[in-house]
Image: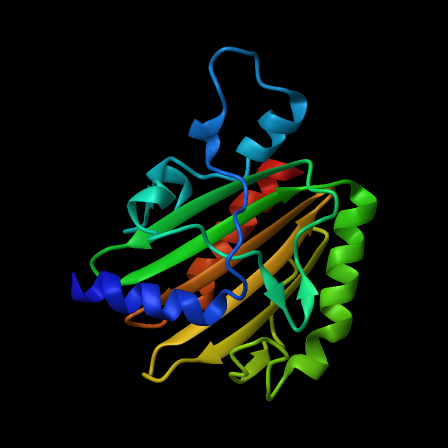
Length: 204
């Protein structure tokens, strides 16, 4: 479909390196009881429409992505805690508008997750204007971002069209969540932050 193809192009703008991240909750085997880390990582996936803004739905990432997305790197800083204890990918879409969001849910420790957000927030002003990412596209920090979780930061970037992509990163205790919004039309920040706040509440 045209909208899906354009959406994937915009997604590629916001992602950087092509390397695998951990899978969605369905990747957890049924042969063993899930660990506490598995259970916490599963909280980063919103599967019910009741937890999403009007018109949005959760879709298995493998049904929309043509391959594994890259590790989330912004302003030269990896948003992935090291070591990564558990990770999940989620994909949300508002099909009627051609809008979508890709989510990375990454479980580290409180110390490593805090270090990630500290580094991203410190790098955020220098990332404004021209990104330090490989695509060298303009990234502008969102100045009026409401507080989400324990720490949060976000950037806007404009693609070759009028659609605007946005990367929002927040920390809830030991977990870092990245929400990459993109589409054939811009995702309202109110809808992106609504999903982020729902996730943060589940993780607190």
